[in-house]
Length: 527
Image (cartoon, rainbow, N blue to C red; front, top):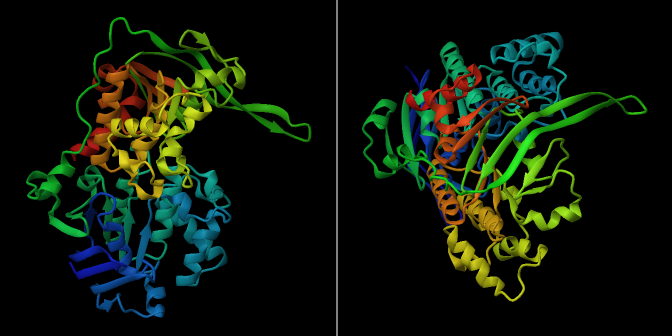
């Protein structure tokens, strides 16, 4: 096999920050090489340097050759010819990569027209063929759709179609499955492998998830702090890792089980036949002609010290259920919290109860105000609920920071000065400072590196044990759910498909849907 990409002694500086340090690797036609490492390891910057997409403030030295062409000092004309044509990219979040103002047909057509000169019916025929190839059903009917009208998996398939539009020699996939459900992730990985085999292209696959690496790559390069600390065939890296960092990554899966529940534990929240239907209106009078049935007749109870895991694919109603329990959206059906019925209460009457029900969101950077210091963020709830009287506010914040594993002297920093895992600890501290009875966690670990996931799971276990917290834990990562949950509720399109103890659901699933979810999550790790 001929070599497509050769990287030698690549160094990248951003000011005083030496982000990539003497990186060497090559990639052959028909081969998949995985760049693996945690956030900040330099893997994405290395990939972007192949076509000079890292910005003018970067200082790059060494050599990056695509075939015989040196890319580091390539002219703008050569770069335009290569980008999107010979070398294509798939990025992590398709919603930010696709233009929300343009239809799918227009976005795919731009690249085809630019590089192949196809227009009109010829371009449309090529677009339909590409969408068929990546598994979009009835593609002729989706050409006029906008990105927001597609699911996450469909948007990622469109991104893959765009990357393949000009039959590239090299496909660079930067965390293309991180934000997807486990079943969709498995489909996308299988799709990429099939397309690579049929097209004979090389693929540089960037990820922090070693389970994904094992399923798709031929060789692995493990990066830490800008350095490739270990590389070799995938089987050898997994079966006989040599570097301590590689061993740490391979062992970074949440393990163990949640602690026991006290026999005297009281019920914190009970929900019976909860329903959330969004009306569909038509005409000038906005008559209701139907409903989007987001959540249908869901019932559960959570006791002190107990975790209910809620799993299901995107669109199954998981987050809608959480928002309804928090009384942030309207719903039907009784909700009893700490013995009080809360489903019919006004916002004024709900306010004193809200300190006891708190929520932690998926993206800590998006849920923390960039204008507030850590002290302001964490203490805001104290002010809202009038709980800071007679207390040394700064000391209270410092105490909760240390309890969630951060240093007290971080109190005056801003969110952008922290890593993803540290920001999530701040979000947990903001909720915990009010000493709630119920904590709703909506995908709190999915955006984090695997090693950081383990740390957050351990932290949540410790807090639950210490304070007897009830958790409603939402996730598409079933490994995390199993490590934290006493009971599991499986949702699909708003309906409860299956519910039971964690052991029942994971060891003896009863429905085909649950079996498919578990197989997608755990079989991927076994490959």
